Length: 177
Image (cartoon, rainbow, N blue to C red; front, side):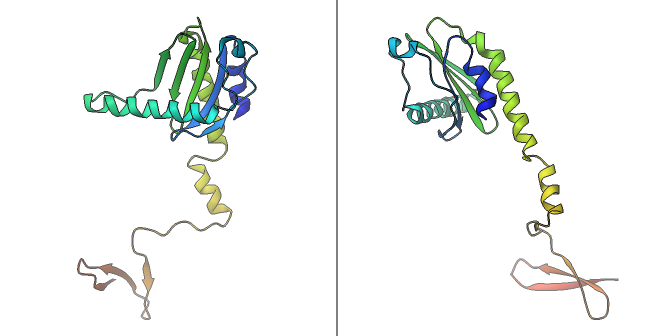
């Protein structure tokens, strides 16, 4: 994951890049923030967990506040401040969080963020988080979960019986001819 985030972290004006789970746990934080962060008072060293939790909480609150308005959930959120800008972009299973230096426009990193998210999702698909992973598990000899439908079973006469459960909890069997 860090390899996918590294090009974004190396852009000029990007102070911090984090990939955070939807519940606020940092997954990947590449590199060390730049030397100008101490002078600006924007050092996040040792505070990544707190920043991740606050950012995901804020995104969750924004999502809950626009839900009654029947708008779609925000996918990209920008908060400008005196010392910099917080930019968050939501994916299917994570949030990409960036802190930009003062004076840098969030539009300057929009394309780079989209590319980073595409690389992350592509790497997750290649790790087997798609429909092919179930086929791979079946070929590896792993059992599949039990079926929701009842299985047919052979009776002594060679007929196939199908077990049915009635709403009152009793089990009836019917035979197919």
